[in-house]
Structures are given as C-alpha cells and as structure tokens.
Image 1 (cartoon, rainbow, N blue to C red):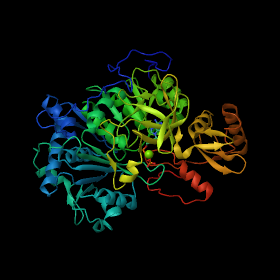
Image 2 (spheres, protein in one colour; image 1 turned 90 degrees about the horizontal axis):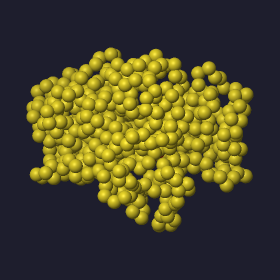
Image 3 (cartoon, protein in one colour; image 1 turned 45 degrees about the horizontal axis):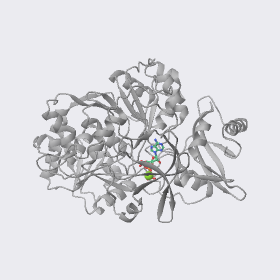
Image 4 (cartoon, rainbow, N blue to C red; image 1 turned 30 degrees about the vertical axis):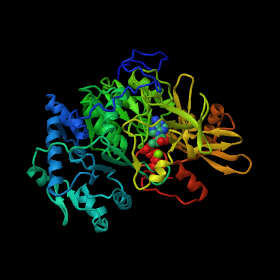
Length: 580
Ligand code: ATP
Ligand code: MG
C-alpha cells in the first residue's frame, strides 16, 4: 500500500516548488518564448532541443525511454540511442528524396520505431503526423488526404488490412515504410534501411514558426480538425512539463496516452525528453494489474493519465492498488475529460496523492489550466491558469465579447500568444479564424471561475442543458451520479421537452456486483434528487454495458443524443466502445 505522503487537498497551501510567481495577466510572460532559439541563426528544431542538446551536455548515456513490450520485453533507449536512431530515420527520408516541409504520417502501435520516427521526422524538418493505430481504413484515408501525406510509416499487417486497397488514390503519397525486415510489394522495409543509413544528420534549420506537427482533434463534438503546430511549441512543452507536471531531470515519468492523440506527443514525447526525464512507454492497452505492476517495478514518480482510466481504478477498488508498492509516485495528473471530485478524493486516500486535473485541447498544444504542483487541489476544479496564461470567462454579444465576473458561467477563453498554440486548422482557415474574437481565443467549453481564481468545467458549449429556466452542465450531474456506489460512469444529455424546454437523461454503467433493475433506477434517481434537487436531477436513467467513447477516452454525449432523437450519428471515425 502506498504511504500517505504530502496530502494536498487538505485546504492549505504546501510549500511552493514553483519559482515563477507571475500571476496570469500580470505583465511579462514567465515562459521564455526564445528559450531554445539558436543564438547564431535563430533556428529551433524540436529534435535538437529534445535530444541532441542533452547529448552535447554529456547525458548521452542517460536512459530516455523504457519500452515495455506487450509480451513482456523490456528495452532501454538512452538519449544517445535516440539521437542515433532519429538521425538514421532522417537519413532514410532524405535518401528517398523527401524534403523539408513534407508530411510524414505514422500509423503503428507504441513501439520504439514510432519514437525514432517522430524525432527523425522533426530532425529532417518534416511534419510529423501520428494517427491512432486502431483507426479503420476510412478515418486513416481522410486524414492522410487532409494532411497531404508524402510518407506513411506503418506495419505490414496494418498496411495489408487497411491501406493497400486505396493507397494509389492518395496522390501525394511517395513512400510507404514498413517497420521490420520485410515489406509488401510497393513498400520499403524500414529495418534494413535504418541499418544502412547514416547515423549523422544535423538537424535541419527550422525557423521557430516552421510547421512541425499536425494533430487531429478527438472528434468528440463532430468531424475532427487537423491542428497545425510549429517547432517553437517546444518552448511551452518544456515550461509546462516542469510547472504543471513537475518534470525534473531524471524523473521517472509515465504518460499513458498514445501519440496518436496530442497528449501522447506533447507530454508523451516532447515535454519529457526536453526536460531530460526517463519516460515509460507501454505498448499494451489498459490493464489495471499491468499498470500497477509497471508503476511498482519501474518506480514511476510522475503519472499522467485520463479520467476513464482513473474511474476504472476506482471500480476495481482500493484493494487492487493495495497489492502493489506504489510509494514511488509523487505527482499524479489527469487530462482529457473533467475529473469527478469523487475520483480526486478517492485517489488521495489510495495513493497518498490526489490526481491533479488539468485542462487543455489539441488546439492549445499544451496544458493551460492546472492544479499545479504545490497548489491546493480543489476536487472537481481544473485548477488555475498556468503562469503567463490569461484565461477568462466570456459571453458572446454580437461581434464582441463581454468578460463575465467570478461565479458566472460562460465560455472559457484564452488570450493567444503562447508558443504551442495551433497556427491553423488544415484546409479550414475560416473555421480557425472564427475561434478568435476581440483578442480572445474561444475554446468551445463552458466554465466558471471562483473567487480564488480556480476554474470549474461545466460542459461543452454544445452539451449545456436548459431545463425549466436552469442551465445545467452534464459534468455536475455525472459527478453526482458516480458518487452512488452502484455507478461506475455516467453520460448525461438534455432531450427536448414541451414544458421544460429540455429534460435531463442519464446513461450509466454499473460497478461489479450491481445489476440493472427498476428498484436500482429509482434509488439512483432518488440519490441524484437529494444531491442536485428535483429540477436538475435526471428524469430517466438508462443502464448500459458501456458508454460510447472516443478512442482517446471521452464520452460522446452527442452520439447518445443523436440516437435518443433518431438523428444522424455524424462523424464517428473516432468511436471506440459502444455496447448497449
Ligand atoms: P473535437 O474538438 O474534435 O470535438 P475534442 O475537443 O474532444 O474533440 P481534444 O482536443 O482531444 O478533442 O479534447 C479537448 C477537449 O477535452 C477540451 O476542449 C475539453 O472539452 C475536454 N477536456 C480536456 N481536459 C479536460 C479537463 N481537465 N476537464 C474538462 N474537460 C476537459
Ligand atoms: Mg475540441
């Protein structure tokens, strides 16, 4: 059982570890946007900053990446190894006639080659675009079209099953590299190419504003957008890794996200390497015992994961955690969806450390609002804006915005200007421009700020429920529902109603040991009424085996609603679980 150390939700401030005291909006930015610009020519190359710099500084032999294979393999790669491999990968691209600015798509599981490929692509000045390997053919194809893919790196199995058939229709595609020693016809095996390629490849000169990464959003609210990020984003990855996740040189850090989602690249590749941590990469999918064993055996210190996984930990109970020595953990963080207060309190009891919720988006490229190290955690709150990040709550009024006072619900907005902000939505410039009004970037999320400056997530702008004159955020209702011992997860929507405008309807999954029944439905409704009041509590509760989620783990409320109303399902290219 983990020792209880450092309780941080006790209502008092712990000693500040952060040396930056600039409050949001209070003048000069505490992060240095020029932190990594080359003094001679002003260039910034992410691979150079993340890897080569450490090698030059004498850390070639430090382990950068511990890879845990699905089948029990374990491999360590040092910063020196990453430099060598990424140079070789960059050489392969160059030898095949590819050039700066070309877009390199990657579609594979979390194997070491993926990381070599990410860093090699950036080193070569090309644009790295990771896709989640479990996507079906259609989502892969549309994304490759949007991104103008010149190169695809994948496995033979994925290629044959999902790509071979339509590959010729992607006219931009010049090269398909296959991980391993053999390749299907028309493709090139990467293994022999890497072995033969030059291990010397100086990072290509990239200006701070040169394109580096394309990330597609999760598709929770509709068709995914391709957000473009630049090399200088690394300045903010470095800063936020230190100040939101407490990454220090040598920290053992595990970000569980796949690089196919922005978290798995910003905080699963770039931020850890830039901060010279040792990062864990697990090839396998979520398995609670494997996860706890990994924390124990690898002595993970900082753990960054998502609410869906934390709710599974809760579902398995404190006993499941007690079977392992998890005392190495010193900082826990969560992102992707709102983290229910129940989960924060539970984790503090079980790990001696609460999960620190933080908020950001594919568009922002890095953590914007966080329960930061050393800060009192308010369970259910996203925390406070990062130093140098200015956040506000606004209401749209015609073509202008009005800032709202504390405690009022409005749209969460940010003052643009940090380095990891997207530079456009690919081929959707107009949509990108629409995000900016009156000098604010509008996030599409609703939130509220309390008198202490903490931000509270209410829901997506599209998910807000209006019932009998009340405005209800689904998150509040979902959090109250999962406080009931029977409820594991909840997705809440509003459905049209003649008298009330909308009524609240909840879809829930149950914890082990509970079965759906009318009696349970009544009991859960009673619990919700007591917690929330009759106006806000769900009128109907439906039991489900699972909730529809994106592959990045977010509950797709729009799909629950579309089905409820018999409307078209819209883009479901990122849909994962879905059992009724
Ligand atoms: P799409 O934009 O395609 O609909 P998406 O918004 O889910 O998908 P992401 O960029 O992966 O795509 O997710 C960002 C969104 O996730 C945020 O705008 C917010 O709605 C939600 N989110 C992320 N972290 C948190 C958090 N800590 N609390 C509440 N919501 C969060
Ligand atoms: Mg979004």
